[in-house]
Length: 266
Length: 225
Image 1 (cartoon, one colour):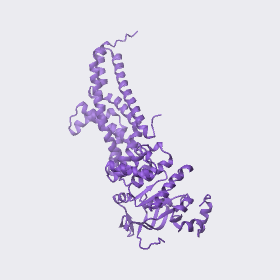
Image 2 (cartoon, rainbow over the protein chains, first blue to last red):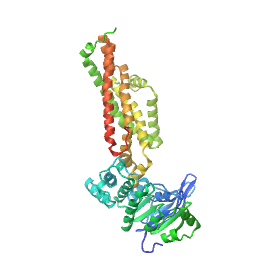
Image 3 (cartoon, rainbow over the protein chains, first blue to last red):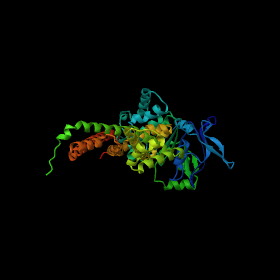
Image 4 (cartoon, helix red, strand yellow):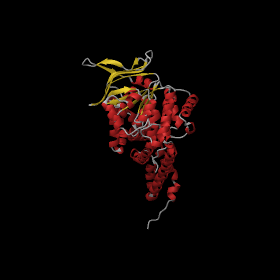
């Protein structure tokens, strides 16, 4: 599926399950992500697509299954009292891992008490302990990339939704993540602001970055993705190229989802 | 018809000024120890670790639910008997009000911290912050801003509650006013001037806090209407 058999998976997910109490949200996900992959994750609400994304950088701890980053399994095995095996995760390991996997949220989650450039510098200063001047220069590069160098000294409250999301993308980029996760990045934006955020994401795709995107923008997914995953009931119900999944879906549920979804144009 | 006469009060104003200084001393000490101790208690309570959360919770509840006058008596009269430490009136007053205000500030801190949206924690963790880095850099600065009104309310309450220290013969403003009233036979005038001094000090603090809130409001959300 990845085309190039020599390429090792950057991210490998096996048997991933996530339960919240009695509610099984993910029921066995297997996934391989190779460097440069652009994966769009679609599905109805409640299908587990956001939870899947949030498990990949351990915002949520998986209930079962394992995740390897660059060939190294995250966490360690421990034998329970009844002899079964569970994975345990040390907070320090997860903290280090999250530097390598950037995340962009639906609600932006900018730090409101910091300026735009303060937001972008924060990870460089506090997490990577870079000197202020170096961090500022790097932050400005990222703000320029998302077209907001002139808003560097503005506080988030003075930015539009689209601008906030672009700052949030710059904040994630500043740490040089190996993988970028986008959790419905345009879902809380006014329709006229969606385009500017998608344009930034498209430019990142052109740079060959490895990205996973949960989205309802099927038209964008079609152009953006190298692979589309359709999630239903916590499993990958169908996957393939955008052409295969979005235009010629094999599975009845995928067809029903696409038909129910508001009309989109390629 | 009562003849108001403020001349004896003004002639002895130095006594009241000394009392005011002492009031500042005990209020200031209580704030200086109460705020950091309150933060520590709040963080201990929020860890969710029983070994830290329980003692902190117990201390907070005991000091919030018992009368400050009784607490003061305990520090001044009971502690010397129980553990043989002699306390000066100032030490007893400072200890009582430090811990008592810590208990209240702990709840203010806790309320401020839990009011910050979960997304802020997640954004901090997503860029690789540890829990304590996110607390220090992301959560507390925002929580403190939201806490300012409640914090000022407590500080004002504290300054007025310190009038209780008169019972352990600490010469605060109200204690001095009482002395002066007996000396001059002018209790109405003396107490009026004392009240005026409280008003001026507290009102000044209250104005300063509004100015501070307004200055902090530049970054968006505001608590000033």
